Amino acid sequence: MTELALLLISALLVNNFVLAQFLGLCPFMGITKGYDTALATGLATTFVLALSAVSSYLLYHGILVPLGLEYLRIILFIMVIAGTVQLIEYYLQATSPVLHQLLGIYLPLITSNCAVLGVALLAVDQGLTLLQTLIFSVGAAGGFTLVMVLFGAMRENLIHDDVPQPFRGTPLALLSAGFMSLAFMGFQGVLS
Amino acid sequence: MGEPKTKQTRTFSDGVLKRNPAWIQLLGLCPLLAVSTTVVNALGLALASTFVVVGSNVCISLLRKFILQNARLAVFVLVIASFTTIATLLLEAYAFALYMKIALFVQIIVTNCMILGRAESFASRQSVGKTFLDALGTAVGFSIALIGLGGIREILSQGTLLAGAELLFGSAAKGWTITLTDGGLWPLAGFAPGAFIVAGLLFALVKSLGRASTEQPPMQLKGES
Image (tube, rainbow over all chains, first blue to last red; front, side, top):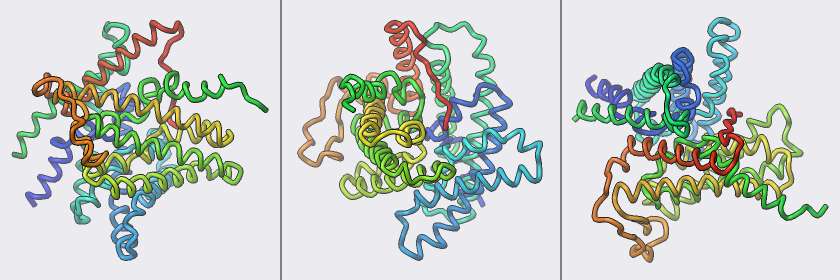
């Protein structure tokens, strides 16, 4: 039990996917212009990430390993992710138009979010079990959402600040992310 | 036909300068920040990315008449994933020590939006020759950004250049390491926060240079395809 808790905290804070491992930076820089969109993207990503990591795990160990085709995992995983995104979109469209309206435009972008593929690959490469994969992916996605929301809220304020012209936009976002990453480095003490 | 030579060089140089995938379009930020800890790591990923960008775009251009319009994105992704797998296997076979350091980001080339972007907006419409130039320009532009950031971060964090070149070029390259200062001036540059901060400062520099050289705004954000 403690092992699983450590795995969760490690993925959530210590080895935060965005700030320590540089995964999922495209949506982080592109979408976090405000708090609301950041939260919606984070939630949609969490859902896709956990679902696709678990299905990737099952297909990898169920099909590729018995056939000795482990090297095809990139192709398989990217198809699983694209398929998961498509299925969720159909499902939301049919069952919850409100949620579909809210998350609809962010869903297709998740396919090209490297954090989703990264979690699936890392889980397989580290030889995690199914339960560990689930915990790991939830932790990673939770960390992604947390940072997206924090950063989105921060950027809402930064937009109105009077900064020198060359630093407006991306450079300032990167610098702020750097200081946030510095703060997150402090979590490394939690596990040791 | 006889296309003027300047137009061909333009196809290439636009990818390097005007449409630089990393500095101007902000595509492929994850590998740019993650792998730029040293020049050799950056070089390894630059080579792998170049192989995937050029290979997959030329392949898509060759197949463009046979790809169904509705299924095109799925086909593009499959082609890119196949080339990424080949690049992964090649690096694993010939530079295993380096591969172990950058493994995750070599495999993640497949989600780099710059490749899919070029496939959708260029390779699926143009001839093989033009596509080759366009893809090569994009790849060179990305590689320059990656290796440049890698160089700056390596100098700041370790005070060296080309440390560990033997991982990529074999044992003959052991003496290639250039030592500039004894130890790093700013060790943080080798860690995650340093990557963000150095990249942020470089972006600001590129932005102010772009503003000085051209009148039109250099920022041209392109949505993901």
